[in-house]
Amino acid sequence: MNNKETKTEVILIGAGIMSATLGTLLKELVPDWKITVFEKLPNAGEESSNEWNNAGTGHAALCELNYTVEKPDGSVDISKAITVNEQFQVSMQFWSHLVNSKLIGQPEKFIRQLPHISLVQGEQNVSFLRKRFEALSKNPLFQGMEFSDDSKKLVEWIPLIMQDRPSNEPIAATKIDSGTDVNFGALTRMLFDHLESKNVDINYKHSVHDIKRTSNGLWKLKVRNLDSGATESHTAKFVFIGGGGGSIHLLQKSGIPEGKNIGGFPVSGIFMVCNNPDIVAKHHAKVYGKAKVGAPPMSVPHLDTRFIDNKKSLLFGPFAGFSPKFLKTGSMFDLVASVKPDNLLTMLSAGAKNMSLTKYLIQQVMLSKEQRMEELREFIPNAKSKDWDLVVAGQRVQVIKDTEAGGKGTLQFGTEVVSAADGSIAALLGASPGASTAVHVMLEVLTKCFPAHIKEWEPKIKKMIPSSGITLMENPELLHKIHKSTAQTLQLSEKKPVFS
Image (cartoon, rainbow, N blue to C red; front, side, top):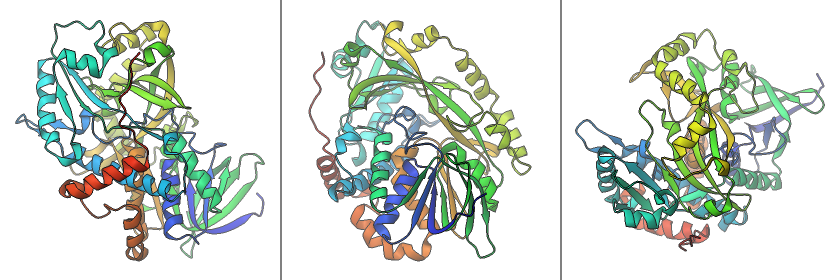
């Protein structure tokens, strides 16, 4: 071990979208605080935030059917869709602030306007989609949404999906043009470039191995320099663990009581990518279907136009997979190493409760390429195997914990912040909607962890995010004003695509 020891106000673990967002917020609010970042990979945004590991939907609940649930009485509960949309509006405002303040450059490098479409087949699903549309379209957040069960109209919206489609089954879709495609990998790298220019100490190829509380209340981290092999010691007043699936291990090492009885269930994903530019040119939307019965929410099938490396791509998936790794670049022992005496019962209970999920994952892992093509043909009837390649997406670790509603070992589908009672350390766990709601989640971290400062920060936060503390749904005028200004700043064009 060498003698390098540094002290800093804030340490961020992991160079993904969450740390990038928190670091950027803190630099705006308290520019003189010293911030240090540790990332085990050579660059920012290489794991969960990377554009090939992240669906990039800009989750605004415009098309994701799992955010709107049909209740036993037949009505549709849209409360989660409203929550997620409100949170995405916060991200849009913050990104606009960064562009307006020239803290980051060209918005088209990370965000583009793209219609969001929900597509269903079968009488029952068409009836559900109609009810969902009626509930959402009355809400100002979802203004501009259209519904159609007319095949001629659907040919206009989704020509590739409607081509050669048998006409005997009812089919319907909703479309909203104000959706987006977000390249979170590009955005993460832009934010870290900005942080570097503000003298944030960013250490790539540095892996955090241990984290302990000192007698004077600081956090002491043991960090290995992966190039030299040397172990360094770093202390900070506040630590944020934003290491994707790897956050669970570090949260456990911190020893905080809030981190007890929590486990993680890793799920990997596989996408199919179209390599034929003629086919890519015929589709211009993110189209989400309905998850199959028994499938987890993160396996909702979708056919997405994506803009990656300044090139238009077409992705279909995800197909669920299983690996015991907590990160794509993690260890095969990640899952086993996360089982501790305090969470053993929680993990066992989750295993017993989720046998159907385990069975589903095994079935997904066993699928051949041709079987995956059959699923794709539900979206594109004439899809040919030679036009599509398989790409392994990122790992996601779903949180397992004991809850009042679900009892012991409940599998959570969402994003969660776990923080110490004194606010000196916080960890981000979970998955979707994740990146899309990063700004809202990091503001939650600031509120929980810096209660003594939040009052003085409020005017600055309000300047960056005008809707802060306000429900946009209840303030249509402010919502319209924000929509207009963010669209202008982020250069979200209203131009209609030309299909070849």
